[in-house]
Image 1: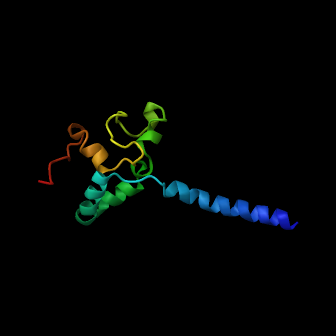
Image 2 (image 1 turned 45 degrees about the vertical axis):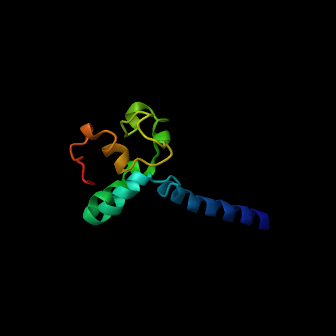
Image 3 (image 1 turned 135 degrees about the vertical axis):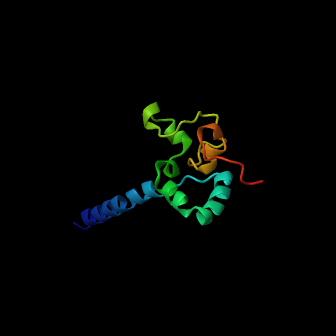
Length: 109
């Protein structure tokens, strides 16, 4: 009986922490996106919060490219981003493909 309770307790703990792993992925931000966010969280915090809640903030290019084209939610080639293990942040879209983002402008110089 004791072993069954221990296994059940372990299983319940696993179930509890599994969703947290998905909500807070272990993926990292690119240096370029970190620079963007350091300013934009002060100047345009709503945009940053919207991005944090979006799929882009939770998926890497590598993960996105495993999905079929319509399910990717990103429109980038595999060579567009330097590190495909970073999440899709500001810099990964707005600095790589500025012609597709009308809100892109040179505001660092």
